[in-house]
Each structure stands twice: as C-alpha cells, then as structure tokens.
Amino acid sequence: METTKNKMMWVAAALVWVLVTGCAQTSAVKQDEGAGVVQTRSSLESLGGFFELPFKVHASQSRIVIYQTPEEKLSGATSIFVDGSYHASVVGGAWTQLCYRSGRVDLGARQMQVGARPKDLMDSITALNLSPGQTHFLRVVQENSRPVFKPVPQSQAMREVSGARQQMHTISRVAQECVMSAETVAKPAAVSEPITLNAQVLFEFDRSDATAMTPASLQSIDAHLLQLRNDKIVLERVHVIGHADPLGKPSKNDSLSQERSQTVREHLQKKLPDGVPITSESRGASEPVVRDCPKAPIAKSIACNSLNRRVVVLITGTPR
Image 1: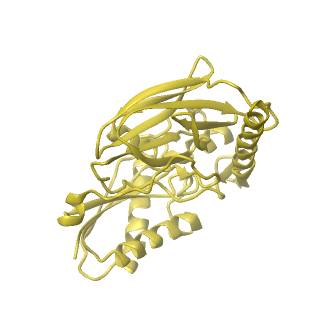
Image 2 (image 1 turned 30 degrees about the vertical axis):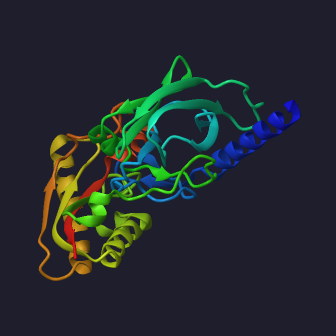
C-alpha cells in the first residue's frame, strides 16, 4: 500500500514538472530607442485559451473556477486536490475549472517545485459549500508562504482572470462533464459575452498602431467572432474599451488608450457584418490590473505592466 501511494505521489510530481517546464515563457527583447530601455515581451504560449464567462450549469452540479494571478509570488505550481483526488496544477497567469456535485467539498492546495520530493501533506485545505447551479470563483493567494484558495466575487474574478490562460497539461481525476441548466436550454436569453484580447501583451509599450498588436491578439479576436457565427449569435452591439499602463504622463496615456481602442475598432469593422454598431471609449491608466509595478519606466516595470496595456471588447447578442 505504501509503495503504491509513493508511486502516485511521484506521478503527481512529474505532472507538475511537465506543467512548470511546459509553461516556460518565450520572450523577445526589443530596444526602445525613445525611452532608452530594453523591453521584454513574454507569453505563456503552451497554455490554452483565455477565460470567458461560462454558461450556467444544471442545478444538479456546481462549477469551480480556480486561478492564480501573475503577481502572486508563489514558486513552482499549485496542485489542486478535490476531496483528496488530484484535479490540476496552476501557475501565475493560469486558470482551471471543473463541474462537481453540490454540497460541501474540501479543496487541498500543495505547492510543488521541479526536482522537489513530493509532499505527504497538503499546504492548506479550504472547506467550501457548493451551491446548486452556481459558479464559485477561487483565487490562489499566498499566506505564510503557503498557497490558499480564497473565494472572490464574480465581478472581481472577471477582472483578474481576464488575461489568464487555461491549464491544459494534466487530466482531472474528479471533474464531471458540465451540464447546461434546464432554464438555459429551454429559453435562450440575451447574452453579453465579454472578450478580452490577449491582455498579457496586447500592444507593445508606447504604441497604438495595428502593427503593435501581437499575432495572438488578432487570432483571439477572429476566433471569438468565428465562434459567435458558429453558435448563430445575432450581434446587437460591440463596445471597445482601451487601457494604458501608468508609465508616463497621464495625457499621453489617455491618448494611447483612445488610439488603441480605435485601432481595434477599425479591425472589427472589417470582420463584423454590416450594420452592427461599434462604440468605443478610453479609460487611460485609471483601471490597472497590476498595481505593484516599479514606477520608473525601466525594463522591469515595462514587462510588469504588460497586463495593463490592454483592450477589452464587449459583445452583446441573442441566439437565433
């Protein structure tokens, strides 16, 4: 029995090793002549898609969404256990979800590093009461150097998980197939589907033109629009919101966010059917996702603020 347990723990450690090494960031270094600094652009290329608000699950189930923001300073990957069984592992900038039975559930967190011996005990256990048909959002936070699952409201989670990528490296031993609620199946309602375009590095530093958009950003837009067409969603309105990081003068950031929203608006006009109204606005640097970056315009701060150089596209439509 002890031998079998040890083997299973080593397998879990190996899966975490795959996650950590597979998520290694690829980076491109560019010299910014105007600011005299080196800009580093990085992305989690090997992770899955960006987060979108999922459909409501059936009353016989509950959904759990767990994510970790990039600024969380946990070393390695956080392994997630549901009632003692392994589900997945997440790193900073990644999310995972599962559908599960309603009622009380114990969520275990175990921090793992490459090459480290597997732990016998959890670093923390969070008891959660899952409500039927509801989605529960949990953020991985660090408390006393240990990972802990902290429940957060949906509004906060949607802001923090917008640029995260789905963990796709391991197979859950506990997740159930998600079943759509009877209400959603019987009566399609108007949907407001938020789309966040590659919030990690949507625009290069101090730029707003179309060539400054990353290929992943353009692919994200086109993929969402294709999915809407496949789902036969009749588009009613599109709203584009531009953001900037806090580096530099406020007036310049206001202009950058406005120009970025206009760049994305022009791209959407080429992709959307005629007659779909597209509105836009700019919010400058007033709504940063990451707030603890260095204030000086140095390479470290530019990389840290990549999540703040974003454009959000909100699409409203109804099923046919």
